[in-house]
Amino acid sequence: MIERTAKNDRPDSLRAMNRTFIICKPDAVERGLVGQILARFETKGFSIVAAELRTLDADTLARHYAEHVGKGFYNDLVAFMSRGPAVVAVLEGPEGTWETVREMMGATNPMKSAPGTIRGDFGTEFTENLIHGSDSAESAAREIGIFFPELAN
Ligand code: RTP
Ligand code: MG
Image (cartoon, rainbow, N blue to C red; front, top):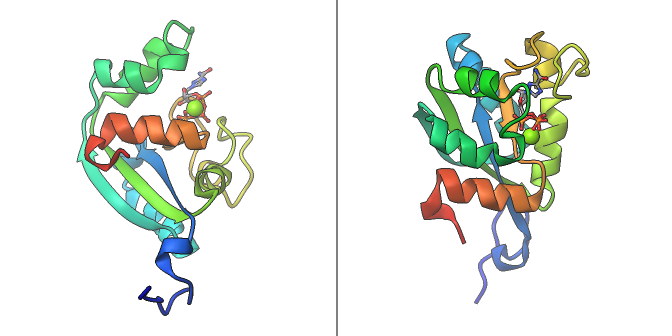
């Protein structure tokens, strides 16, 4: 027999779930904004299935930001991302959660991010833009594998 949950009245086995990976970057930790950032995702209805305060090293960042290695901003990005602890986390919600998380983050440049988004409400700096979120289902799987290998499929 399949159990139904009060929350959605659908069998859990039939409900397509999606996990995505986020980082509350070191500026978010320094500024004491992690609680507010995570609260937005929880209020939206996403679940935190893993979260840890972690200082990221250059090797891990090179894997995570492989697409940016060698770009003009890369050294500044690594210096920023490794200068203090970040909060790495995995969020779970319905299919397409990664995309909604990206919408809630706002555009990469906080000066161009819409009000109501995390970057739009909390930031002004291009590199120090508070939050990372996976940019596709494939990226989410890859990044969860880097940071939380115990959760990888
Ligand atoms: P993220 O990967 O961190 O979620 O950000 P994103 O997709 O919105 O932007 P992406 O193009 O992947 O860039 C990664 C991070 O590098 C920094 N950056 N600085 N100064 C610059 O020109 C520049 N360009 C990118 C930002 O921290 C950006 O989030
Ligand atoms: Mg990106």
